[in-house]
Length: 590
Image (cartoon, rainbow, N blue to C red; front, top):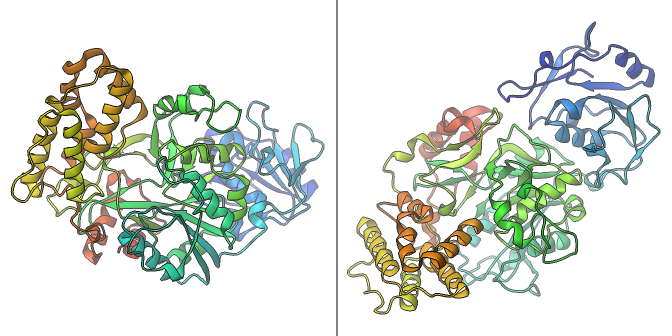
């Protein structure tokens, strides 16, 4: 088997930067009749098999060239952050009865991926040989037990809101041409749902929101699935028309997988930004702080009391060609997984929506030996987004070389016609602010005149109303009442949730400074700034949900693809370059 080499531009070590291996290893491999796999070159002589195979986080070299017998892996885990992806594929491609020889053996402080919980029942550790660990495959691994890519269960957690966008999502699934397909909805869909005869509804016995236990919904979808391949996704995601082509190109026996997802801020679908797909954390979560979870007895870094510290860990969109062992995860918006893999590592139902349940799932899966990775062959289309998570179109993303930067499309500054910013009807937004004022402003707010909060004039009116409501508010004095005030500020003014740390900061500030802190809510509110910076001229809210799905155009797809391929720090990737991105975008557009 040839030498492996990291692709250029990823900031990963080339063979010349690694110590050479002893040529005697080649003799050992030949004696066993085994292939040799390494990122290192021999100190003397050539590499068995000739040439080198270039790999990145998208490569699956054993899919088309599976091993026929034993494989000796020399320093793979020590030399490459891609080791979890390569070893996952190697172990699943290995024939039953063959062995993987890990040389040198992994250190006790960082056990090999192949000895973790997912692999342990199926890979038996034979007697070590001269400092090498020998793992023999006794049985097929869970992801191998139900092979094939023609049978899919599409699972969507749903709620009681208007089903206009859900109808688009389900209609797209029905049009994918999946040979064997079922669509499961967890929860009762809202009014206007048009495809009741094409879906199966499950999970009606689960407690209603709030709080939204999205983990319980996804686990129920996996438990009810009739087919071995799962696509669990939110009801704001339009799957691409080339879905089947993409999954076949990527291959079978996959772990937790994401597509790159795009949110377009404009009605021409020309201003793309990556949104909620493959993620990476900056460092070990919560700096190893632990707390008691809602369910279970084992201390956890994701316990409610620790969530503010979890938030401060730092998260970014992961580059699809990279992998960070034990720190990569698939965001909750969409996850492809083998049914057996999800059931082997379900989500933690003690965590609710926005409690980092997707991060916890991905990191716990990695600890069990199940990595998270990207299928690069297509993209999905996000119908809506949470604007409070970005600033002026910028998102925090990992660059190809591993650095993390704020990234935005270069044409974001153009005054193109925009979609509504927040998924809420204008009348509902007006009512919420009026309820906030009624609760805390003795005289209430005067109703907006004329056309209300529409267009540029409406944005100004809304900002003026918020300023009047806050500066005139009578603040409560007890800790519990101040906490309720902050919760109302989020729900009725910002129309979203602030971070855990920020919420605690606001409560403490208002308790310490009383009315003197009200100006802080306005002058030093990054959340408020993000909303109004994104829509200084509107529209903030929708008149119709159809406004979130403007028809796609060839021109918009071309402009978006060129920005993603040659600008925007290249944080979005397709193996076929800008042409592949253009095709993928057109496939995903409404």
